[in-house]
Length: 265
Image (cartoon, rainbow, N blue to C red; front, side):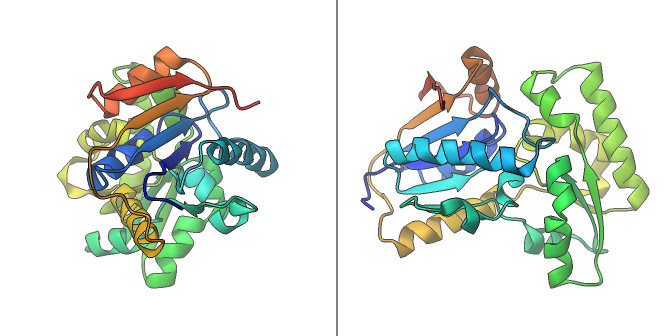
């Protein structure tokens, strides 16, 4: 792998742009290609075999783009097992951090809530990771199936989003959690709404920064980190390009990105 090769970032939709934002901040010299499968989002309710087939298509796209590393900016895809996704692809793959150490460090009472998709909650991966470090922790996994469609549908100021936030945060309050981890990359898009509903008594953790640190470690280990110059960003979607652009700018307000519509089939 060469230093001037780009880094691929993939997600089931637009949510992974929140991870891309963190990667760009911590790796300003790198070139990024983001791929969001907006044609088939959300992945959360889908069967595992179908999701795996979609991921393989996206990884083949990055083969063609000759990337040096792929960051899977999606918790639903990461819990499939990054090692099972690699197959014959030459690049390394970094998945989303489960943030177990971060969330335990932030929680005074070790009462932790997990907001994630139905698929991610169903695997128990985040709860298992937290309990593996601290078996005494009390973990409340809460599936939030309404969030992704509302975010992808740009319903940021809607009654529907307000009701969904109230529904899920009420469950968190009932569980007595003092710390919440946002285990879906879409959820930072509505972090303020979640914070307002929970108040100051609940710490909110986004594992994107820890994910970026892992990417930095892999680049350094392979001797292919780019440290000079200013990197570029190309953002690709598989459908609804105009909507994707609007959502991406909700997280990345600058105008220095190149946007493209691509077909994976």
